[in-house]
Image 1 (cartoon, rainbow, N blue to C red):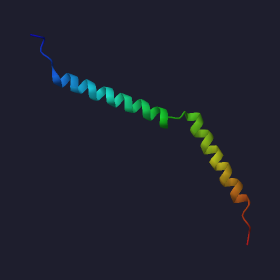
Image 2: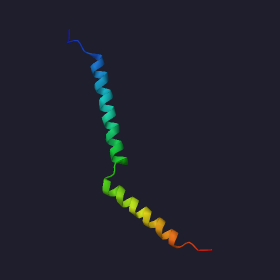
Image 3: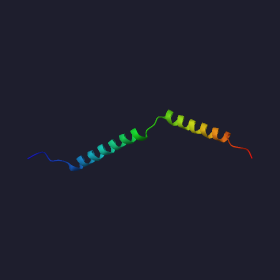
Image 4: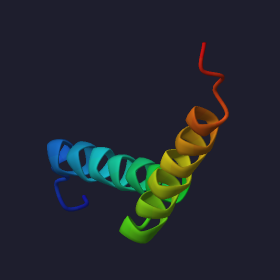
Length: 58
C-alpha cells in the first residue's frame, strides 16, 4: 500500500498555482510602470489644453 495522500493539501496547492498563473497573465496584460502612467497623463493633459485653446470665444 502507498503512502496516504492529503487531498486538501493538493487542492490548495492547485488553487494557489491557478491564482498565480492568473496574476501573471493580468500583470502582463494590465501592468504598466509609473513612468508609462505619468506619460499618458501628461499627453492627455496636453491634448485637453490644445483643444481648449482652439475654442472660439463668443
